[in-house]
Each structure stands twice: as structure tokens, then as C-alpha cells.
Length: 164
Image (cartoon, rainbow, N blue to C red; front, side):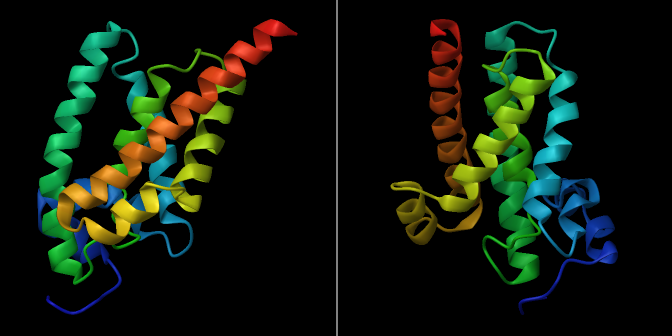
């Protein structure tokens, strides 16, 4: 399958890498698959929420590394390196953002909005990385950078909230 194609249920089930890269099916959404992928990452974070911060980071780092393979393999199958249906990058990135987010629905909503904003907007150097670095690593990297922007913004908002 070297040509550009819309991900299908058949592709989703054809290989474990595709199943993961397509966010267990979230990436099949016709509209806003990245948003659906981000939503999948939030309850997945709950599986590691009770672990210490460094254990969370180690797990997320491992998910990032395997994500390079998942996203690369699925991008090749779809004929597009960073196809919108590939959402493993959003899943892992929102999990990273949640490591520094207070466990309260309002802060989780803020984290979600900030991450989606930076992932869509792609301020420098995210846009440049997205344009120059291809393959699975490029797919994962631009969302990692968006997560870092979201984390910094979240920390500023948390600090501001204590100043009022």
C-alpha cells in the first residue's frame, strides 16, 4: 500500500503497530482524529497515575520509543509519513502533559486545550521540525514539542492561579 489512503478498519487490525498507531481506532475518525487520539491518552494516563513521577516518565519514554516504530510502519502503509489518522503521538504527548497537571477535571481540561492548541498551531520550532524531520521520529517529535509548550504554559497558569 504505497499510495496515500484513508485508514480503514482492515488496516487497523492488520498489524499491532497499526492498531496502536491508529489509537485503537480513534485515528479512523473522519474529522479531528488527533483530538480523539488525545482523548484516548487521558484515561490511559490513569493506568500510570498512581506511580511516581520518574516511573511515569520512564513508561512514557518507552511509549515514545515504540511509537517511532508504530508511526513509521503505519505511515509507510498509508503512504504519508505523518498521516492525520496516526494518533499514537497525541496519546503519548498528552500523557506527558498530564504528568505535571493537577488531578482535577478543570486542570485536565486546560491541559487538553493547551496541548491541542500547540499541536494544531505548531509554533516555532515545531513547524520547522514537522517540515524537516520525517518518519516515525518526526511524527513523535512534533507532538513532544507541543507537549513541552503545553507543560510550560500550564505551569505558568498554575503559578498565576496561586497569585490571585
